[in-house]
Amino acid sequence: MNLNYRNERNAKAVAAYYNKPLDKPDWYKIENVSDDEGDIILYSYIGWPFNDEREFIKELASMKQSKITIRINSEGGDVFSANAIYNAIKAHPSKPITRIESLAASAASYIAMAGSQKQAYKNTMLMIHEPMTGMWGNQYELRETADILEQISGQMIDMYADNTNIGKREIKEMLKAETWMTAKVAKEKGFIDSIIEAGKGAKATFDLSIFSNLPDEFKAAAKKEPITERDLEREIRDVFGLSHNKAKEVIARCKELKGDKAVDEAAEAAKKAEIKAEIEKAILTLKH
Picture 1 (spheres, rainbow, N blue to C red):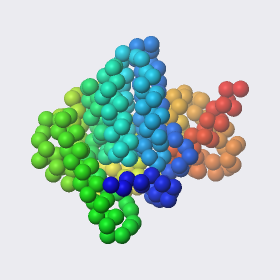
Picture 2: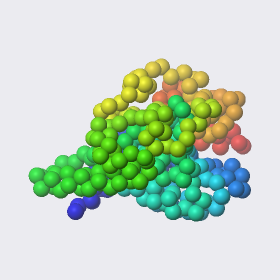
Picture 3: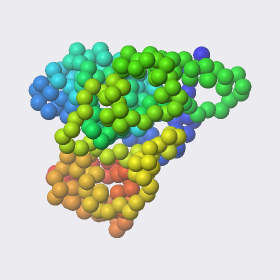
């Protein structure tokens, strides 16, 4: 069984498809709410080729708080990375809570399933589908890859069946169909335990064109719209937890760093999580 897909050529191909840089693994953030409570904010692609799941697992293992909440807004990622993270969450003595804050698609649904309590805001979605890959090779390699995908599919069916209240036959059909679920439907089928009525979830700004049955609301969100300076301020506040005034200062500093077109360039980059380095430079400057 040849699983040697984690090579430089494939990494570059995946990065080009998602239009994401390979050298900026800023995919999660840990916040210590108190001595007894911690949050993990998982708001990006999961695992290879952009991120190393070992880093996440190591930091999770080091968390000693009695209450840990893993907050999810992700388009998915590598199934083996997600499976390793799933097992680490299941094994953690604090029995972490998982909370969908906008989208738990594809491999991100693995993370959602790992919680001792599985929560979701009422305006969020969860999606499951058959494992898939992109490759080239001869007839023997392609057949072997199909066999591997079939085995992964069987493991996924078992995992979802263990964590929901529906049978394997229904799960198999849901995977085949690429099934998108609202929080209400996800709760009815046992993919989540409770719906959070108060407040609102985060906004999903991922490129989801790889999926075939994308709901209309995500198709509409995927359309390119003019991005204003206010949009950029909101992105900066969400990512770094800054005040409105501080976010405006950061934008002003970004203009100095990048020139007159900085707001347009930075706003577009912010949607792809590519501006973090520039914003961090601005924040460091403002602190001095």
